[in-house]
Amino acid sequence: MREHLVIFDTTLRDGEQSPGASMTMEEKVRIARQLERMGVDVIEAGFPAASRGDFEAVRAVAEAVSNSTVCGLARAIEADIDRTGEALQINQNVRIHTFIATSPIHMKNKLRMSPDQVIDQAIKAVKWARQYTDNVEFSPEDAGRSEIDFLCRVLEAVIDAGARTLNIPDTVGYTMPDQFGGLIRTLRERIPNSDKAVFSVHCHNDLGLAVANSLFAVMNGARQVECTINGLGERAGNAALEEVVMAVRTRQDYFPCDTRIDTTQIVPASKLVSGITGFPVQPNKAIVGANAFAHESGIHQDGVLKHRETYEIMRAEDVGWGANKLLLGKHSGRNAFRSRLKELGIKLESEEKLNAIFMRFKDLADKKHEIFDEDLHALVSDEAQIPEEHYRLLSLHAVSETGEIPFAQVVIAVGGSEKQAESEGSGPVDATFRAIEKILDSRAELQLFSVNNITSGTDAQGEVTVRLQKAGRIANGHGADTDIIAASAKAYLSACNKLHSSLERTHPQI
Ligand code: KIV
Ligand code: ZN
Image (cartoon, rainbow, N blue to C red; front, side, top):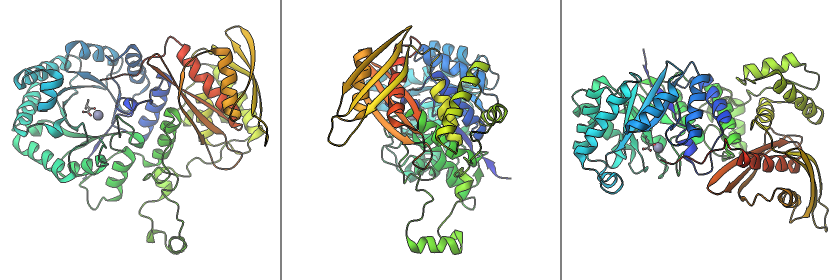
């Protein structure tokens, strides 16, 4: 019997700490449902004490998810832990993850605490968290640069206090794989009560070693890996879930353990996260990049055609490529539509919402013959972004002609009234955004404009992400349409709606 490797996904917490990757509550719930469908053991849903938005999002995820443990992060401070316990109380299957830094540089310069004070606070925090749940995880932040004797003392003490998972973070992505593997082995050997806890790792990718470090740790006894979809995360990101899972699954001859991940859900999860955050996946990214299974050279193609395994160590369909089968077309009825949304784990709060999205599906099916799962996700994303649309695109007329200055005219509903403006620009998108700004006068700074084709073919919908920043608040807006100028206008307005909405929150910071 193989040992179980726990997959702890932190896309919604550390992933969201990627500059610009903030997500709305509804988007977080959608990602959480996909993680649950994929078989992730623990979903770290956020950091409830960071903001009201994070608190609400953790609570919403705890309410929506039943087959994965839902976890909230808290500093080793009673008030943070109380807030986390409160956000999670709606669900029985929860975990509190508390942390405090243990490296000399962090203790001296950031915490301004002595090592003994840090130990005391860590013990108090774990005991405090145990009031809410038996499932408590402790992280000595910056463990990769902590002194080994001190680390052993802290970890032994927190196990005695009731921590059941010990997570060893390489917070700044500094360690080398054999060094990090050795650290895990040493801790397990030297800490007298180490058998009472599961050892976990949380590696950052500053030197491009997050996955390698995690796998070395697994070979040295770690039985939980913290990771994110597409390797999203603070700075250069975290270990990519898809790479860790597929390395362990593909090399069962090498690893003594396996995960319970349904790998066919990996590509859909990657596309969902990329669409929501607007962070495109590089084409040559392992597992989830568009070229990950594409063979260009004649020799390779010939080899694969003769015998697939000559050049392929995994099957594209096993990680979910090609799983987005053609399913619906313009003759599909409401019931087929409803049941496909259900299969995709998309829950709509009302019959009106379903009707609205169904109408848009019909419009899309008129323009585009084949509707894929990604198209449905984009439609839902477009429709369900915010509770109420303060700004709504009523019409757009954009002109782009060789030798002429691009021009756009927009009509927008603002609250109850209709406003019109026109503008020239360096291209039709620029002209459209300028015309919108003439009406909205948002003065927000455009931080990102990205266009992705949702599926292949020239009739594909373009999914546009616009990231706006204003007064320290960041909002990602999405728009999907077969006309990318219209998709751009929708994305711009959706970001403005989020900035306008009082529910939008600031980007959480630790
Ligand atoms: O990188 C880190 O140290 C963290 C901890 C909070 C686990 O994200
Ligand atoms: Zn981290």
